[in-house]
Length: 456
Image (cartoon, rainbow, N blue to C red; front, side, top):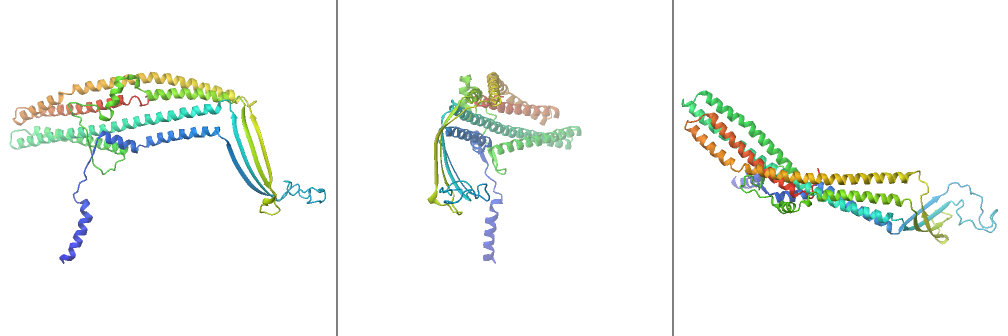
């Protein structure tokens, strides 16, 4: 029996091994890795890159007008009834004399036509050149859009990253508070059973412990929600455990490494702030100026060189007769100029001028908002730094106060209320410290990304 059971046991071991108590190794996620993953997976960046490709295609389409335009067409016609039927006879028939009408298009039952046409713009009153400048502006604007989109993605990922770190810390604080309240309850209950504490103190300790449980539940729900958002941005599987390589309790909280150089550059040169948005607004003005030039060029003539070659054949049967093909080839020049278009061109010019006025106003507005956004971001960073520094010694003091209160309570020198107040003060100090660290890091990242962030 044993030789038969051995292969079965081996097979069961191989099948069940991945699920038998083998916990997955958590992924250590740094901010740099999170940014790299997000930029590789971001749908917003894909959309922005598609816009850049579209702008490149618009430039190629505009340049195509500068080259010859050649087209070919061919077709076959079967005439079922014609007004010329019987009018012309073949050879020297009646009404035809000695003229052979078999190669003329009048009333032929079968007709093959092949045409090769070509044209070349010679003069467009500068319209093609202006359209090319518009395409160049579009390409530059698309590149700026990609940069702005990347900055938005980086800010979103950084915010989600630190939100997870904060929610993890707050969950730990809440769980620690619950454990402390539970320990106090157990101690009070033992004292009550020993006859050293009244029932009132036991009930108070139990209520304080139970009141801490919803805090833990809410903190865990907030952590799960923040983690889900981070997983969505990074497109990480839901069953993959993650550990963030970040410390919100560090005594020296340095700026996030991926943004340290950019932060220093913005602080040294404040003119870098909102450069992408201002450049886009300036390109918008330039685009409207070129639009006016294009509308005005429609008033002037356009000159083109045209040529057309055609071959025709009228066989007596369905199949073509290549021995009797007639050729026709023309060369010429074409001048087109609007004489009266129902006041359409003046209306288009008025609309283009209105677009230019709007673009200039938006540029002025963008400059004002850029200055406001820069000032607000810098003030927020300084306020966040001051708030974080203000919490530096609070945790140590609150921890010491709780230790003293806990010792006094265990020795029977203080009440449950004093211990509870000390515990809540410690939790509040720890939460404020973590919140201030998260706010300071996000404020730094926002300042570092000011050059490319859109104006809000």
